[in-house]
Length: 301
Image (cartoon, rainbow, N blue to C red; front, top):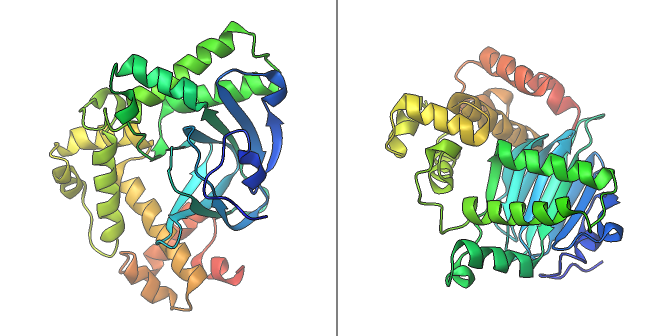
């Protein structure tokens, strides 16, 4: 099937690589397109078309190594599991692939907010400026948004009809949440109650990924966003669910997995490339994060 660059939320499942195991179409939820997907263990790269309707994806079960990129650009690799959130209103298609270990096949819920409801919500939150506001892509953890996604999954599985007031209230709540939390109109606000602002978080994440082979301290990361190490660590964990050093470790092991999978380089070279001067320490951390030693990981490929 040829995947178009753009499609509608209604047609979106035609181009998804997963199996739809629940859909709200028959429940007639006004303003939302909600599907629960189950994916095979390995999903080769496929093109995801853009939609005018904002999209929220949330992991419900299982786990996967998830890779995405704008078409022809560099791959970005992340680990995704229950509670991990992806928000976008991409204007261009993007490529995705992912793989899971046996028995950990990924299930996600995807929520598209219908474009008319989205624009109405923007106009309510930003009177006279709604058309100028853009969604900022986000990947990470947000406990409140994950809770809403879990609640949505429960209403979907229980067959809640669209005429229920809960659905109308939920639609308004989810649209307002996106407008207030994940748009360029709010990204510069230092709302530390909800963790680091998105652009500060992106700055830290980019720095870590560009300097994995170097020593990375909490103090240096805090300095990037002009916070004290204590304040930075608290807000970083609130935004991501991880401490800064847990994030660094995850990114190092994710990069190592990529090198093992895509190159024939020695494990010692790979360890040095991702910031581990001791091969034994690298092997220990790799096993703690992935459940297997680097040699075992390579032998399964």
